[in-house]
Amino acid sequence: MNFDLSDEQKMLGEQARALLADLSPFDRLRQLIDSGADWDEPLWRALAEMGFLGAAIPEEHGGLGLSALDLGVIMEALGAANAAVPFMSSIILGAEAIRLAGSDAQKAAWLPRLASGEAVATFAYAEGPGPVFATGARLEGGKLSGSKFPVADAGIADIAVVLVAGGDLALVELDQPGVARTKLDSFDQLRPHYRLDFDAAMADPMPGRGKLDRLIDQAAVQAAFEAAGAAEACLYMARDYALERQIFGRSLASFQAIKHKLADVAVATELARSNAYFGGWAAQSSPDDLPAAAAAARLSGIKCFEMAARENLQVHGGIGYTFEANCHFYYRRERMLAVHLGNRGFWANRLLAAQPGRQGQAA
Image (cartoon, rainbow, N blue to C red; front, side, top):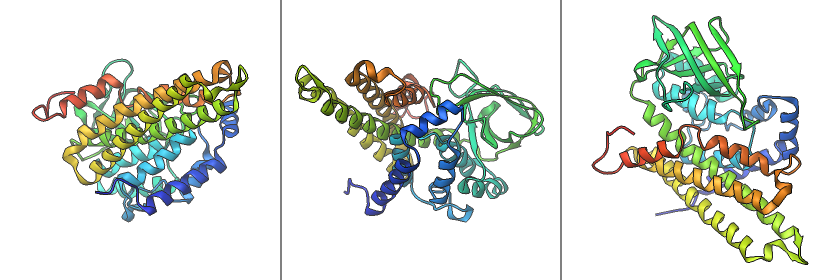
């Protein structure tokens, strides 16, 4: 059994990291925040040109048809860079929902546009406080009514896949009468969220039924890759600062307490990465293992990123809390990812429900 990435996957990761290092440095993130931009559109176009947006989209629809593990390598690089792009919303959730549950016409109309970056999608599943995946919105006679919030990247999205009554999915174009978008306050300034209000908006039902669990399990695996990449970036940031900082006439990194902090983060990050790799393999090769693998990856991803972001701040001390330092980018992203697609309690219940003898029980 080979526990390492292939040479092609390693090259894919190197290409993604090089592109992001060139186009999405921390100064660029500050520019986006200062300008109030919802996303880094030039970076999105560059990702499209490199083929990254179509990584997991089938070749017949303009993508590359790569595996879930290949996609995870890209997500890990995006997490490390804290990139301000709607990759999770548009590719991991929106495009994959269309691939799993869309009609042939819906796939032909939207997957090539999503792969090329011409269009952006989002996935609207929440309806404020309450169940993570809420079904209060109603689709009747091709008309969608109800509200969804918070919805990530809805301000720049062309289409939304909407979870509606009965657990079904509907595809709605957002630039039409009957759709109102309201920007919400977001702790992560580089991943904006919106409220979507639908008032008899035209929408197309998606014929694939029973695909929601598969969709969110796959997305949880990719979120774990993003968390592992970001946690490792925090680890290196804290290490570099500790080596540079002098205190009481010696390097901060020489203190045993600092070494222990960094070692704990390194162990948690490797565990999260290993769980994400297993989840990527299960998504591709063992669907029966995916529910448990996805939940384990999601839980360890939340834990490692929270630990890494907090310890990074602690190692930096007071300066780490300033806008001029880079720690806050990851802390803000960690707080958002910790509840996106459901919090720890939600995924702990799904992990329990996936154990032998408990399959099929409600999470």
